[in-house]
Amino acid sequence: MQEEMLRASIASPTPPVIPETRIEALDVVRGFALFGIFLMNIEFFNRSISGIGEGMPLGLTGIDWLASWFIAYFVQGKFWTIFSLLFGMGFAVMLTRAERAGRPFLAPYLRRILGLAVFGAAHFIFLWAGDILFSYAVGAGALLILLYGTWKPILLTVLVLVLFGLVTGLDPVYGIAGALGFVALISLYVRDEKHITVRGHSLPRLSLLFGVLGVVALVAATVFWLLPDGPKEPRLPLSLFAVILLVLSVLSAIFKDPPAARELRLGATIYTVSFVIMTFFGAVQYLTPEEPVTPVGSPATAAQSKDKTEAEKAAQKKAEQKKAEQATRLVTRQENIAKEVRILSSGSYLEAVEMRARRFPDKMAGDAGFATVLVAMFLLGSWFVRSGVMENTRAHLPLFRKLAVYGLPIGVGLGLMGSLVAVSRVAGDSHDGFQFARGLSMLGNLPASLGYVGLVVLMLHSQSVFSRIRVLAPAGRMALTNYLLQSVLCSVYFYGYGLGQWGMGRATQVVFVVAVFAVQIALSHWWLARYRFGPMEWLWRAFTYRTTPAMRR
Image 1 (cartoon, helix red, strand yellow):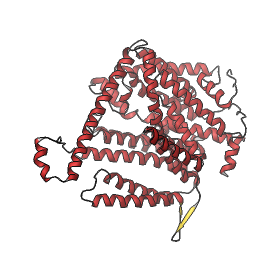
Image 2 (tube, rainbow, N blue to C red):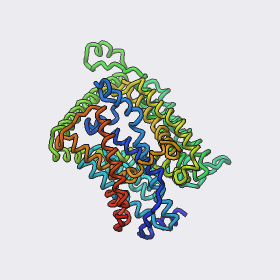
Image 3 (cartoon, helix red, strand yellow):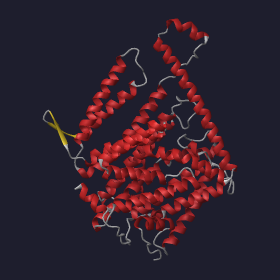
Image 4 (cartoon, one colour):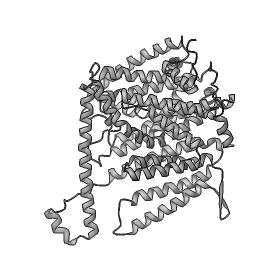
C-alpha cells in the first residue's frame, strides 16, 4: 500500500486547478500569526540575533519594560509555533486535495520544499539572520522522510554522515545524523504495523525497542549510582532517559491505534517530551548549588592533596578545565555580539552579507536539530486538516472553545511561572534559573498556540464585532510576500547601511509594527482584489508545478 502511494505521488506533473474556494479559517489564523511574528522579530532588527533565547534585554524600564514583558510571555514562542502548525496544515491540504483529484503529490512537494529553502537561504544571507523559512524547508524534508522514507537509504546516509564527521572532525555532522536517525525511528510509530510476540503478548516493534533501550539505560544508571567513585554526570541524564523510554514503550503500545490519531499523538508527545527534558535539567541546574573550584596548585589544594584520591584529583582538574572553557566561550560570544552590533548598526551592506553568509552553515546544522520539534508541529497541523477539523471549523466549535479556555491559561501560565524565577539570562551564570524558566515557557508554547488558534476561530464564527477578524485573511493569503516585505522594510529602516535607526525603544517598536502591518493588510486587500496570488506566492507556485499560473483575476 505504501509503495502504491509513493508511485502515485510521483507519477504525473499535472498541476492542480487553481481553487476558487479556500479554507478561510487558515488564512485568518495565518494573518494573525503573521502579526505576532512581526511583533517578535522586530526586536532582533534592533538587537543582536545571538540574543534570541536570552530573555528580556537587561536595563529596560517603564513602558519599554512593560512592552518587552508582554511580548516575552504572550507572544514570543507562541506565533512561530502557530506558523508551524499552519505549515503542517498546508502540507495536509495539498496532500488531501492531490489524493481526491488523483494528482501527484511527492514530486511537486519536493519542489515546493526546494523553493522554500532557496527563499530562506536568500532571506538569511541578504536580509536578516533570524530567518525561519529555511528551517521549515528542513523540517518539511524530515516530515517526508518520516512518512515516505525507506530504511536502507536512511541508514546508509546516517552511516556516511558519521564517517564524514570522523574524518573531518566537524561535530555538527553528528547532529544531522542523530536527527535523521531520530526521524527514522519515530516513523515506526506512524507506519509500522508489524508486531512481535513476547511471552504471549503482542507488542509493536517500536514499543519493544523502547522497552529494551529503557531497561539497558536503567541498568546503566543504577550502576553509576551504586559506584562510589563513578562519574556523577551521567547519573541523572541516564535515569531520566530510562524513565522516558519505559513510559514511551508502554504508551506507544497502548495508543498505537486508531491509525487516524497517530499524527496527533506523536506530534504532542515529541513536543512535550522534548521540553519536559529541557525543563527538568534546567530545574536541576537551578536547584543544585555550584561546587566551588579551587585551582590546582593553590595552597588550599596542596593542603588537601594528601587526603584526596586520584579520582577526586581528576574530578577537580576536570571541573577547573570546564570552568575555563566556559569563560573562553563567554568571551568569544561577547566578541561576536559586539562585532554583529557594529556591522548592523554602522557597517556596510557587504559586511553584513559576508557575516551572515559565514554563519549560514551553522544555521543549517542547527536546523537539523530544530527539525525534530518542527516535525512534531507539522504532524499536529496535519492532523487538524486530515481529521476534517479545519475544513469545517463551524462543526468543531466546541473543540476550539476548549482549546481557547484551557490552552491559553495553561500555556501562558507556565511562562509566567517561569518569569518568577528569571526573565533574562545572566552571562556566565549557569545557575541563574533562566534555563528552567525558559523550559517552562517553551513547554507552554504548544497549549498557548492552540489556545490562540481556538480563540481566532471562535472570533471568526461569532455574531459580534469580533467576526471582523476576517479582515486578516488577505494578509494571511500573502503571508510569504508579507513576511519577506517586513524584513526588507526593517533592514532598510534600522540597519546602518539603510536609514540607520538601530536601537528603537521596545514600546516604539510595537507602534511601528502596528502601523506597518495595518498598511500590509490594506495592500493585501487591494492586491488580491486584482490578482490571484501574492508576488512571492505566484513565484513559489510556478516553481512547484513548473507552470506559469494565471495572475490576474
